Length: 207
Length: 215
Ligand SMILES: [Zn+2]
Ligand SMILES: [Zn+2]
Image (cartoon, rainbow over all chains, first blue to last red; front, side):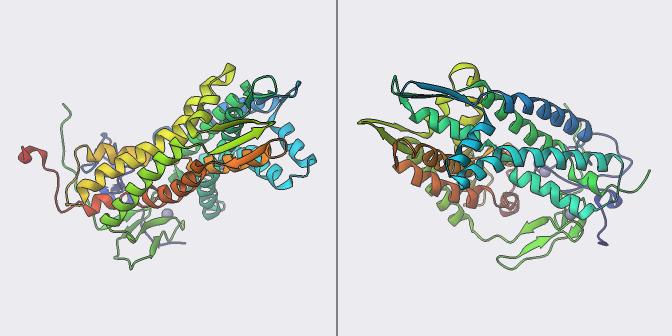
């Protein structure tokens, strides 16, 4: 394990806004601001665990209507249909477009579900001050930050397709309420990941 | 008015954002990356661009941004009928029916946020070139940090490609001039805005704004 001292042991805080290392004695409980960029200095993000849980649970609840409700309405030569995210994936698969089915499945199903699991795991272990697999948990957090926003893919696909297919009676595509739920889920999981303070993973000393 | 207490600062130290380990800063050779010993996160990178090049790439990004927004990204034709869509029209197409509110975050992430990133960086770099901190330097820097996760040009590009494949089954699809600009914008935004923006603080350190005496 590394021998580098941690910020609270030296009585300093790294500013979140600009990275400057500022003096902050451990017994100092006043709210200080970074002298360089004026961002508030926090030893840990305030209420990190509660906020992350709240946003994660909200995302999880909305993920249900996001999957059950149609995301797109299609009318093609008089044939009308409404499809959900999974139906869209299955249609691509059946049509032989395996690559595209896989891309949409990863962005819309695998990434959000993995995010739910990883954030839940990080929260539970951080709450228990667990020292289990800390390095791996730190990596998982960075993975969540890296891949999270790719889930917006399906929202943008519906946007482009709906903008293009506008041939009145011949053919028409419109967005449906499911895509709103899905977009909100993506935003909530991103906010949830941002609320989580990765430094909590390393706070394993029992109090 | 809050009482201002001047805190001591330690510019020669670096704190890992991910695990709070403290390190002494070292000068890195070009292309080197300092990683945290404890959690392996990136601490800081050597500057690979000087301010002039950084500004030049930002101006290039601004030009490409205009092209990406003015020209259609995809054209389709069906039984002699034609249609095309720009980025803006795509975001606007979400603004119908019950799903309408999602048009706002879509427009923000593919148009407004990239625009703000380019505009803010251009503003900051113009002043940084002559060793000054631009008016509004600190809020602009904080905004740039906050905007970064919401900039989704690369997701927009993949979205366009998926749409092209999705539609190619039943209509004729042609890429518009805008799509090449979106691809170029993706690369340029990654270079100018996803790198260590904190560097600008250090690069402008010699000439503090000192607003009081400047007047
Ligand atoms: Zn700061
Ligand atoms: Zn670290």
